[in-house]
Image (cartoon, rainbow, N blue to C red; front, side, top):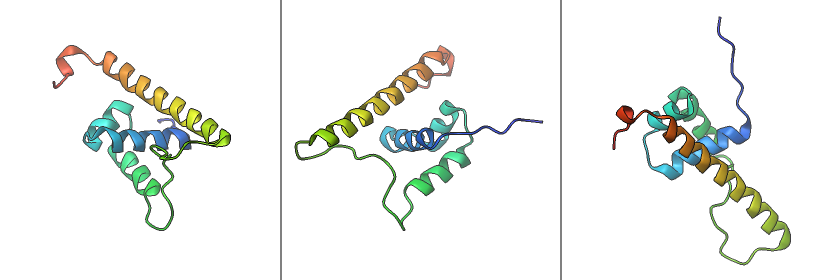
Length: 101
């Protein structure tokens, strides 16, 4: 019997953000993250649902940021940095024969 895994909302949002920003196929992103493509597809559907505003963080602010907004932007950038580091680590772990480039 397998143990059911639990993923935080932040992980789900970051996975969807990675999918949206990378331009790579959903199946590749899911495989890199060690999840089923259907899970990532469902998460994307929930994040970008039409009946409410998207739950993804804003990409860039056009105007200068206030103090509270600066803290939010710093937090967003830290999350993005962690995501990029995770991508890098995943790519480092891949064997040279499995790379498709």
